[in-house]
Amino acid sequence: MEIESIMANNALIKAREGGGGKGRSWKWKELLRFPHVRQCMDLAMNIERDYFSLCVRQPIGKKLFQLFCRSRLDLHVYASLQDALDNFETKSDEERREFGISIIQRFLIDLHRYLSGHPFLQYQDSMFFERFLQWKMLERSPITKHTFRQYRLLGKGGFGEVWACQVRATGQMYACKKLEKTHIKKRRGESMALNEKQLLEGLDSRFVVNLAYAYETKHSLCIVLTMMDGGDLKYHIHKLGPPGLDSDRVRFYAAEVFCGLNHLHQQAIVYRDLKPENVLLDLNGHIRISDLGLAVRLSEGNLAQGRVGTVGYMAPEVIGRKYYGMSPDWWGLGCLIYEMTAGQLPFRAQGEHPKVSEMERRIQTEKEKYDAMFSIEVKDICSLLLTKDPEQRLGCQAAKEKDVQSHPFFQSINFRMLEAGLVEPPFKPDPRLVYCNDVQDIEEFSTVKGVSLDQTDSDFYSKFNTGSVPLTWQNEMIETGCFKELNLFGPQGSRTPDLDW
Ligand code: ADP
Ligand code: MG
Ligand code: MG
Image 1: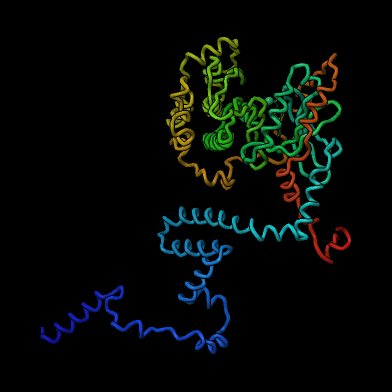
Image 2: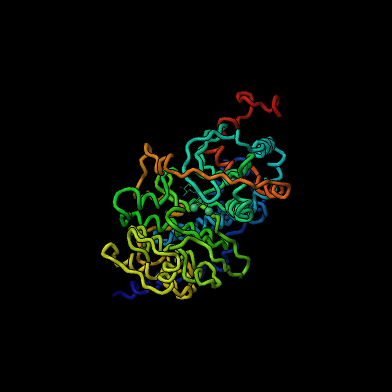
C-alpha cells in the first residue's frame, strides 16, 4: 500500500478512536459558546410553542424539559416515569414484561404521592367531592329486611338458613345467611357469629365471598354475601354423575382455592374448615371460599390450638390438640384435591361411615391409598399435602405457599392471570339450572323454645348490625349501572348543582 494511503487510514482510525470528546478542537468551547439570552429574544417570539415538538421530539428539548420537571417537586413523578420509559425502550422483549410491571408499580406510587398533595386539596373543594359525600350518605342508610326481596332457600347451616335475595334499589342478587338469634344464644355462638362477620368485613379477594351487608331482623342476624349460583363443590363432586371431577377442573379449583387460602394467610387468618361444601361456584365457573365461621386471625407470632373443623377433614395436629399455624389449611387442600379426584375422602371408603374415633385414628396413623384415578402429579401433591407431620408438610416449610404453587401439578396454571380473573374456567354452570338440593329436600330449620333475649343480647346485636360494607356497596352501585345513571352533573343532568346541592 502507498505510504499516503497508510497515513490516511491511520488518521481516520485515530479520529474514529476519538469518541467521548477526544477528537475535539482545543477551542471547542469557544466554538460552542452560548449566545446571550437577550440575543434569543427573536427566536423566543417566533418559535412554535408546540409541546410535542419542544418537549418530546427534540432530544435537547426533551432533556431540558426533564430537568425542569426534576427541579419542581410536584413534577418529579413525570421525570422519573420518563426515565423509566426510556430505559424500557432499551430492553429485550423477554425483559420488558417484568420491567414494565416494575415501572407501573413505581409510577403508581409516585403518582399517588403527587395526587395526594395539592390535587387532593383541590378535589376536596370541588363539586365532585360533594357528590362523593352524597353517595356516602346513601351508603350509610339503615339496612332492614325491606332493603331486599327474598327468593328461594339455598341451603342450611348450623345457625340458620341461607336464602337468595335481591337489593330492591339496584337489582343486585346476594345470598343472605340468617343466623337465628335464639340458636346463637342457646349454643353460645355470639363470638363465632361476630368473628365470621368481622373477618369477612376486612377481606377483599375474588376467591373469598365478599360481605355486602350485616343487619338484624326481629329473629335473626343476617350476613349478606356474594351470590354463588353455581352450587358448592360437594354438589358437583357427588350429585352430578359419577363421584369426582375431571382433572382440568380439579386443577383449576385447587388453584383458585390456593389463591383464596393464600389471601387469608397473608392476613394471618387460618381458615380451618376447607371441604367441598364450603367452596362455592359462581355462574361463570369461578370459585370462592365461603363460611368463615371457624376461621381465626392469629395475632403476631402466635399459634392456634382449637380442636375445630369437620370430622374427616381435620388435620392430625388439630385432632391431636397441638399448637398450629397455617398447616391445617394445606392438609385441607390435600383432602380437597383427593376428594375431587377420587370422589371420596382419603380415609373413608365409598358408602362407609366409620365412627369419629376410628376416622381420627386413621387420619393420624394410616397412609392414604391412591387408585388409578391419580396421575403422578396429583398423587404427588396429595401425598405431600397429606403429610402427617405439619413441619414436613408441603406449604409449611421455609418457602411456605411458594412450594405449593410451584409444584408440577400446577405447572400449566398462570397464577398471575388467575389472580387477575383472566383465566377461563374449564366448566361453566348452565344458567338455566339451579345447582342446589330442591327446596323441599333441605331440612327445615328447627325452632328453639325457652330462650329469651335481653339487654346483653341487644349490645351484641348492635356490634353486629353495621349495615353496608363500603367496598362491596360501592361496587354494587357501579356494577349495576346505578352509579352511572345517577351521577349526572350540570344542566342536562337530572340533578343540577343549583337545585339539589
Ligand atoms: P354454616 O356456617 O352454617 O356451615 P354456610 O355458610 O356454609 O353455613 O352455608 C350453608 C350452605 O348455604 C352452604 O353449604 C351453601 O349450600 C349455601 N350457601 C352459603 N353461602 C352461599 C352463597 N354465598 N351463595 C350461595 N349459596 C350459599
Ligand atoms: Mg358450611
Ligand atoms: Mg360456618
